[in-house]
Length: 502
Image (cartoon, rainbow, N blue to C red):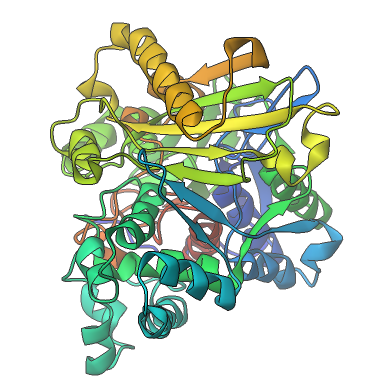
């Protein structure tokens, strides 16, 4: 008999939240605002999850997400508590937002300023100003539809999800066309298409497979800008944590959960690795959804979940480099994406042949270029993310070799663009591979971005945010609805809380 998502939590009841990522913090805040007593349990020494913090030798790094987009989502989170985000988080604009680089020296820079955007597109594709305006009009419609009628609410069937849309709106959201093909409707220049298509990396997917609907990713950044919270992305986490504590959310760190207790298909609470038992009728897990089901549920439920998990398509893994540099890099912008000659081949290596590419795309962030306090005077922070296949696609003993190859590739590409970084310039280096990401944050198969956003894994076709097997169990985070990325994860916490309270 399937569980129901309804009436699991009464106001003034106790709810347990497993994991203090942004999704867990958001869920805890919304539950607390509804009057519930909320205890949030975080396994690590601080909250944040993938949006964590590394500090060494005067350098401060965000571990995962390195840019903030759609700031209105977070303003709404604080606004729900009657607070102003600016009293908790100081946002610094980042514009131009991202520079794209190709091996032959070609570049393309995005800006939230319309005049600069048109100028840059026209440089690569003369006469493209009308196409730019048409693209922005089209993606604005998709974006507004997405947040007004789709991703900001719970739905349990495809019909319930799309019912608010008119037939004309259904036809215009471009879910049957790939992102790459959708961009081809507006731009002939391959550089522009490749740059805007590379936003698929944020979803851990290929622009040749992701639905065209995700052209809204570029629009969201162009329309609302890119931002860096002072102190890095972790500055946002600190602000949200402060809000949660002020509201009365009880947050315990270094509190790793051993398992979720279930009796007669109903949540009874959780057991900590310390052996402590905590009772509650509701548990919201911000641990990656597949990992929650496989590692935290009683065996009978975990076995059932394993069969479903086998059908879930996950995003790629990531190798992340954290470099403390002894000197600043004045010619390098805050955000850069380095694309390969063989654009399609790099994505095929990730998602088809599932082998690390010899010429991978990679992303760099120099947050200290925007907030100098993140590095010692005259120095710089540099974060590099290289998408790689999932764990089972590469043997564990190969990761050291893969890291060395990737480091050489990154430094060689940077030098080709006039950015010479010698090993002597790297004061301190930390490298996380997919096994490390899995160990620290319970990421299923080392998937850096959670469940993939394929056509059949969006909206109600995505893993639900409530358990159909266990009454009182809910999920928040990147692998459930609405999806991956900081704004979506914040919304996922709100939607999970609404489930528990409905």
